[in-house]
Length: 58
Image (cartoon, rainbow, N blue to C red):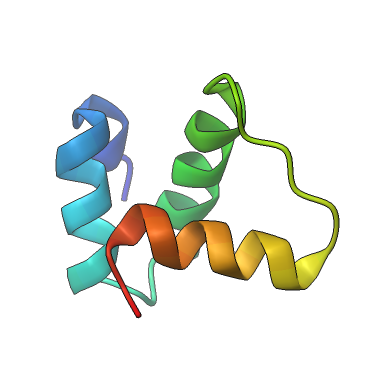
């Protein structure tokens, strides 16, 4: 599915929350997240924590 390419950042975030199996959309979201300034992560645990923070998960 490539419809996620036309979603805003917020819409994509919501889409991923409701479609966690869509790996392509998730990877696209990660690439958008990496483009945002001020996000520096080193390692898997930090990536997971940052994703949870940005997706509003705890």
